[in-house]
Amino acid sequence: RQYYVHSLLLFSVCRSLENRVEMTKSSAKIKYIGRLTRLSPVGLEFLLIYFYTSRLILTIPTIVDLIQAASELQVEFVIQRCISFVHRFLLQLHPEHEAVRS
Image (cartoon, rainbow, N blue to C red):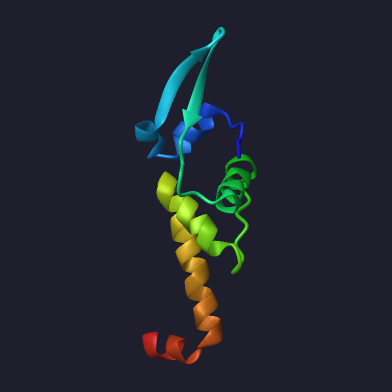
C-alpha cells in the first residue's frame, strides 16, 4: 500500500525514519519514499490517524499491529499508551492482581 503523508509530520514524530528514507528528485519537488517492510497496514493506518487527529484508537484486536508500527517507527508516546492500555485490560481480567500491587 501507499500512503501520502506530510514528510515534516513524519520526521517530527518518527525518530527511526531518518535511517530508512531515501530522497529522490521527481520533477521539481523532493519525494520521500519510506521502505517499511514489517509494518502491517492496519497499524500504520492507526498511527496516521493519530498523527493527523491526535486521536489514538486502542482496541484489543488492533493493539498488536499498532504497537508494532509504533515500535518500528519509534513513536515513544504511542508505545507507552499501548502498554498502559494492555496493562489496564489485563487488570480488568484479573482484578486480584491490583490488590497485590497496592
